[in-house]
Length: 405
Image (cartoon, rainbow, N blue to C red):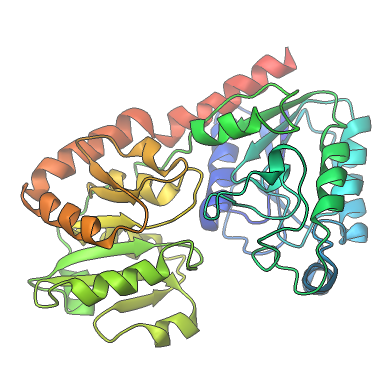
């Protein structure tokens, strides 16, 4: 039976980790063996899991990144052990997700992949693979990545370097090593990202867009939300929900603060999920701040109880939070940015120009004008029709089978 080996920073945790888990479930349902790696955050999985490195490796990699802009140029020993495990398992397909995150040495990995004659599929969840430093550049409108990065204006943004700027060197190294694989297919998760790849140094590879999917059997409307209403005292409130794995200015944290200043607190309640402990303390008392949670049941209940999901991100590729909200029957208001708009159809939400808080407020009032039942039915239909994870991740299985033939 065929074997799939996925390289991921996490398993069944966070959006990328859950995507890796769901791809594994999809191929196993067809009789494949499935392996998934992780460097941190491994939640229970039906795939065989492999740990990459340890806390010291990640810590040392982080220091080298912060001081010397050496991201993905450390973790040498951990990556050599990973390569040895791949050699032992001898998979039929290698599926890569994000390799940034302080756990992989790109030289070691891609030198190996260049000499290991099996198909490689690389899913791009952001833009890091074709820049000299950053994972996103939409926020500042930078286009240096098209011809060659230098004097990075986002040196202090993840993966942050506080001392040196080696964006020019890193750009050249990525170009060299990432173009060293004989048989690789690039999978952008949105049409927007796919168009960027076609302009980058990765354009020689076949590009096949596969949108993210969502588990519609887990993320589904819950009609009885008394537990959530009671827990957070939400009776008679129209809930404005925001969810992120990490909240930053680019993710819209400050925009929610501005929105909080103009809404009627007798009528509305903002809930933000995924905040750090420091951000929870920073939130105004009117906002309910919740830390990062792996409690999917509570997340589903929050989506279902909310009147609208607000995605005020200034840069994103194709956020799964939009899909989770739609699957739970809740409309989405998103900024017009990246691939975030590709899941927000006319009857399931509203698209607003970035940073226009007044228009966000107007969009909220427009959503209220229609009954929630209208949105529940339409949102659920869109999620089931276009973003059912079994259908989306079957595209990976179909691609794997074509590559093996």
